[in-house]
Length: 185
Image (cartoon, rainbow, N blue to C red):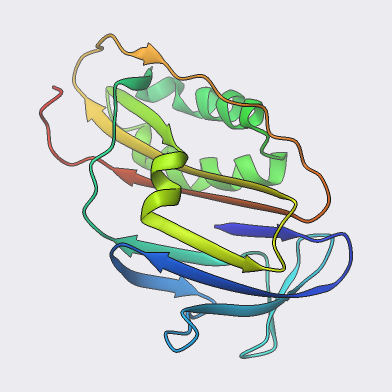
């Protein structure tokens, strides 16, 4: 999910260079443009210029191969994941709308696991999914939650987040992926 908050109505071009395949997008990803052309509004509303329809955000999902450094993160009981996500995402700088939509999407997948090893990839994510936005945002927050279901807790170094400050034209993106190799169990 990519949210746009310009200080005034603004035409914006979003280009994605992803090390993998985009398997779904909404509004539709334009392969010729390698992205989207939109009009964004201060309240977060987005008009996709290709179909002149209103959206709340841009959504895309990709399939690619990438390993993540899971040595830092959090081990959370599945039943306690909702509260954990609310607190973690709030501390990263997400608004209630953004973290609530994150929780609605991811909590059903996480709550069924006895434990989850959760790592929030930021720099790693930016390397595999480069996003070029014109005009360039003043503030950009991109977070990919990487998780692995666990059958028992394990020790992991807690992850520390840099405070995110919203200034001027702000763009916020979140996503997630499950690590499917079970070498940590």
